[in-house]
Image (tube, rainbow, N blue to C red; front, side, top):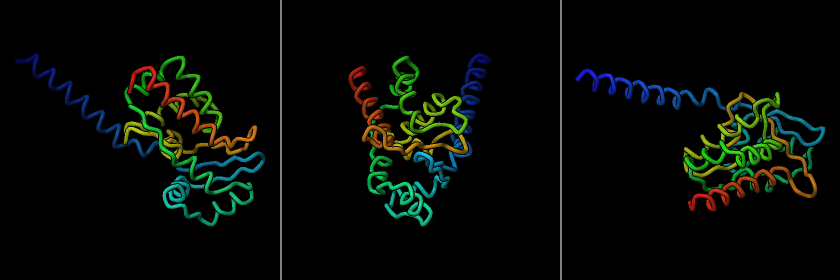
Length: 184
């Protein structure tokens, strides 16, 4: 009887800890995004970028920033919002493998921490959290779930491709790899 009580107590403590972790997660989510286009660098709120990605309406500051950087808002919005379906359990397994580290390193060329330290870990956390919410990820979800107060996004066009497009293509490759490996 005492053994069952101790086991139940441990389970309750574990469940309570997990609930507290998920309830406190927004406190560790990104609040600001630093958009980088070559020498152009501007900070905006994640809320502002999220509103743009949901509605297509640009705030005054975002409109000015994208115009100065000569970026097409429709293209930016497309790269931010296009979802990639993934199973969160398999995603976590792949991201904690050698192949996952390569994928994380490639995506973190576009989305990264201000210090450029622990980019892989921060991105892994944002991806898994995004996938656990609705079994899909998008770049805007990754930005919103990034575990630092500020996240930097490099939007430069490189080799005729927008870097946000490259990040999206990496997410699509990740989805394909998961399907190939696990048949999901």
